[in-house]
Image 1 (spheres, rainbow, N blue to C red):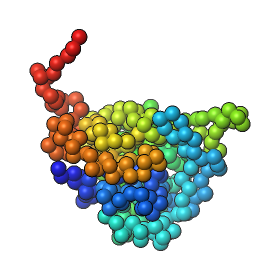
Image 2: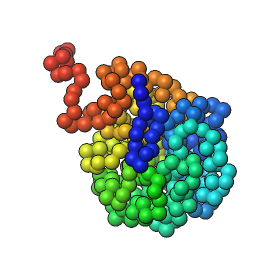
Image 3: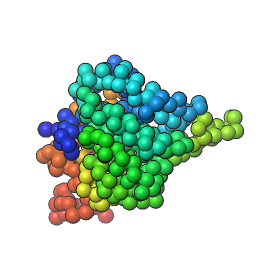
Length: 318
């Protein structure tokens, strides 16, 4: 089965499975465990105009069915990324999506402009939804006007495909998504982590150095599916789905909810090669559920789409 995905501005993936930002570093960290060339894409760790040191430790706390992190977007800055990390990524097949971050609109614009036109950079993911920094980040993703402003500013300085990452920590993700679309985004990626807290009972304090953290992993999958299902009915641009994906069946659920492709994150800490397994198993999973192509599955669970199997063939046991 042909798993290729064609996205706006000529961004073509060999398959719909990409590594999610923040969980795959810049690629070399996983290279001895994962067949990187089999992936559809890699969204690298967030990159800012200048180096960021991140939050104080502890930064990670395991929860039932998930993981809390408070990394704080530590990164070496865009110049070091271009000099030291991008050459490695250029040697491999997946499309490279650079996750960009900033404290101000100007900082987002500076890093986007710096990356525009560089060989090996295929798209930008504008991160306006990270819950682990005090200024910028999630605050831009919680207000439609600010989400519009950041997206519009980035659009002005780059010809690269832009996807903007939605926060689940808002009253109406649909309103934010519509503002992002109006500002010129080519795609939406959804969702980022949910804000959470854990308590270290032995030391009688919050477990994370940053106090709160972002919850990821299988625990948030139903939240992600709900948001994608709602946003897919409110915008006309593709959605890249993420949030607790751990299997090819999970990928199918995200496609049917309205995603055109997916990113896989937290599960790779436990099973580094899980993305390769998902890519191998996805054709069989699609076929076993009656789909003859990947595209047929996109949005299949949205209102107005045909049911499978036909209703007259469905049986119920009392």
